[in-house]
Image (tube, rainbow, N blue to C red; front, side):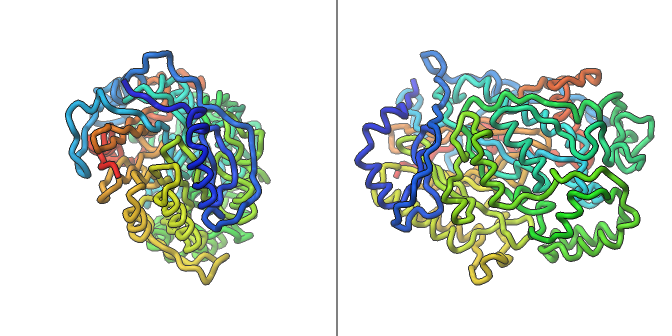
Length: 584
């Protein structure tokens, strides 16, 4: 039977080693009841002032005996489409089995009876909580990219709350039955770098009431009641482009979509990692241009565009030719007369990196903790968004900021952050009381090819995914790099570590992942990965526009979204797995 050492015992028994580790890394705060959070100054050898928040305790473990289970995970059942054409409905599909991967080490017989659980946590990624009425949304690019127009996006808040409900209902970690320690979000928590969306995200995660509406408080005003045949009009008889593909007419859908949603908040501590959509207007343009800020809060929205102009705009975005948005601004100005009126709303204003950290530090959003959700006062002082934190006795977590302030949706690290990461990893290997490290980021190694200069640090070099991966591989304490961004499940071996990329919760199949690290006591470790869906039922009812009914529709609409990629769920070896590693 799997075991895990209690946090209280860890704090007592490892005190001497911990003090040595903290002295080496310059740790600055106690966080989440599972250890110390290490801010961006860690490794400078300076004793920064501690920011102490209330200690949050991981929820009580399930009643003994702890045991593996399948119910409520994709090991039990997975939403699957019925039919092969038209608007496909969802139902209960066959489970995804667990696959043992021996790319990095051979599994030994009998390990199930020997293993000890070291850590267990949940990864959310790419929630994309969307203000669908936001004036900077570019739905008119639907012919160029499926990410521009998703008919399900008006239900993103209801879908995210249902995911929170799923985590709250888990009986612990599926492979071992061990208690879960925390939830980590790996970026693109919001979609438009909008204060409305940031508020919604924090309330979904920590608990609260969310009204997913902006502009006119009385009714929706966006592309879905614009009268343009380009978009699905759920309430209208209009024979729009999506109804011609089989999308239904749903009376009252838009009113229901902007109705208040109630989130219980996670019953676990949670941590936050920033993504490009959290930091950059449109997820791809360097922030700071007052034109985009004015348009975001203003009363005009572009809803249609000549396809040739749209193709040119998107080509520039994909190639990284317009990181500051000059081409985009020129186009919007040229199309000003064709913009449609909407209700202005100051709450749609973009937030800065400092405001992002401040919002996380607000005690009103603490939930089960920690205050700051990984970010500390040192992040505010240094204007950074990366940190390290203790997961358990043996495992250190490291959250990176891979967004490039210079613009473009791909990522990179600045030299200061890369050197900080190197100092943290060296401290672990010099004999700190953590034996292992797990790295979190938004971007994958393959999507860190953007070396655009950071306008705030014009002399600082940017470093891509290959360089970051080479650094991680030099330190055998790093077991996994956990990320998102690609919206696809993919698990890749890299010599001594696994890169675990998880699909989004906006595109079908709308998943999150539970990860469990265990010591097999035979010279190997295993990292279990188990995918979970939201708590919403697989089968939908078009007449059910309750909060739960909308969360179910969110999944089904995502399945049918025009241009949706069927392979985002990944291959069996990218889903539910046991990833074997050599023990250092």
